[in-house]
Image 1 (cartoon, protein in one colour):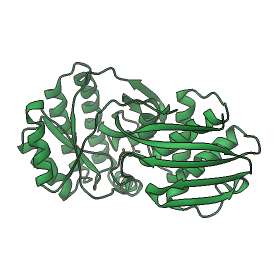
Image 2: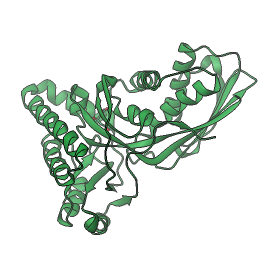
Image 3: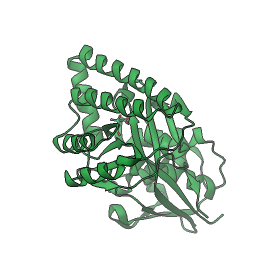
Image 4: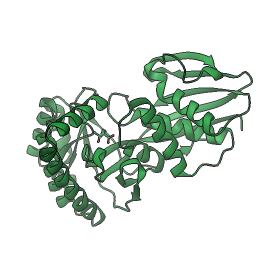
Length: 324
Ligand code: MEV
């Protein structure tokens, strides 16, 4: 194979963000806005990357220098994924051309870095005929993210790899596919990009100062996640919604919510949602609302009126796959 195009879904965390970094479970769903990646073999031992969505145009270096020196921000995840792939599965002398394109903006918090990492590992495995299981794709992609960020539970990597809706424990200790009925989420973007590693480190500092207070919150969140799994499996949307509200209260107690998030959340609740919460690290990115179908439009309008941007997504999307 000389060339392959693959795609991986973005994600939204439904329950359990932050606590998941400390070994508690979370629930994450994949969304139908996808990252696409084309990989091509080259006859020279070079690496070329085009990723216009993150301002990378004809970035080029010798294959032996991959991962070395200062890397442009937009190239980092693909380049370190390539480095990790080559280290684990030495390829012949040929080089690689990669280009990426995304349905969604990297500012949404849909996990564009993770999706591009998973796409890179999967595409290279196809291109160089290396058989990798989903767990091996997950492990190499998670290693890539940790090499770069040093922190992270890996649920976004799992969502990009496996797709669907997952009950997940840090590092892939548990990755359980939940068989659920379809439901509609309303997603509102705040217009602000969250700095996830910084927020995660802030929570770590708070926990170092007052472990009892923070661990108590994490224990409550864990109970919510366990109940949410049951509610999802039973398609009990009202319960699912009320657990979202409860989870949001604990995120507010952690002080990771923000004025704009809370404005959108309040507006969605007032318009009749079953439940609403932020999704992800907090501080910005997106909020999610679950509403009865009859109120979905009103909830969307309320979010827009409050200054948010409604992003249309379907949940439970397919994991990483070949496109051609
Ligand atoms: C960020 O989307 C979610 C966090 O739980 C961090 C992580 O799980 O890697 C805050």
